[in-house]
Length: 269
Ligand SMILES: C[S@@+](CC[C@H](N)C(=O)[O-])C[C@H]1O[C@@H](n2cnc3c(N)ncnc32)[C@H](O)[C@@H]1O
Image 1 (cartoon, rainbow, N blue to C red):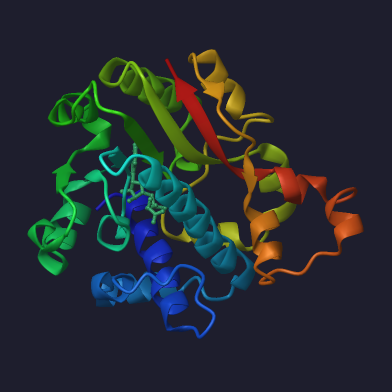
Image 2 (cartoon, protein in one colour):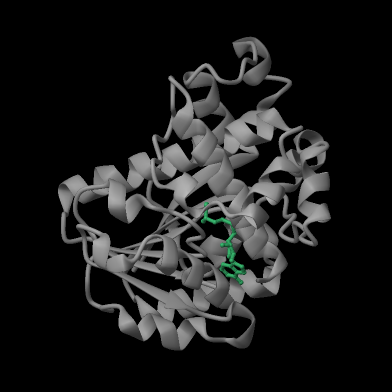
């Protein structure tokens, strides 16, 4: 398992914990299923960062709401989740033809704990070694002409600029017309608000590499346009009343907290 893949256990552990809460944000009832001893050890090492934990689960909810909204309009939507980790939305949302793509160790573990045949929606999992250029051929399993939503969550910050440019090129070649939803963190947010939470990322042998002032520019340069206003992760956390930041600060001195980490919706073609 590569170092970035280990972080998938962190995201999953938070959703498992959230699912037990009386005021669950994501209600991911499958997350606990994926947690192994290794997964729990990784997750437990993060518990000193409650704000990051809560942001992570709120991020997941933002993606969940966006995907669900689109499935309502098109129940046949092709959903391609790249770096899917232990996401279980294919099981929890109605509709969609789903692809989950990730490193072999993740896919193998997922298949053992939650076989794709048990999913009510069509679901195909594909194991790829991202570092060996295997994504491009893997995407041939998808329908290039279908109405397609690509989901890339909690991934771009770990890639360097060249890897992002290459990934976007692969997506464009595989799906000339598609929508991409992804979260992007800018340099300002990283420097001012990540704090100690980042120590855990480093401790797992991982690091954030995409530290651009405006990372969305890479997407515009690749031919994408913004389809809707980005959604602030911390803003939604405030809506859910799980993070408290006074409104006057959030909209002035702490704008970097409001706008530095958001889910973007990009359209291609
Ligand atoms: C922080 S986890 C996020 C997992 C999941 N999307 C979620 O939000 O729960 C990052 C994921 O990216 C995957 N990954 C690693 N290298 C990647 C690459 N080059 N491109 C896409 N995904 C990658 C990892 O295996 C891991 O599952």
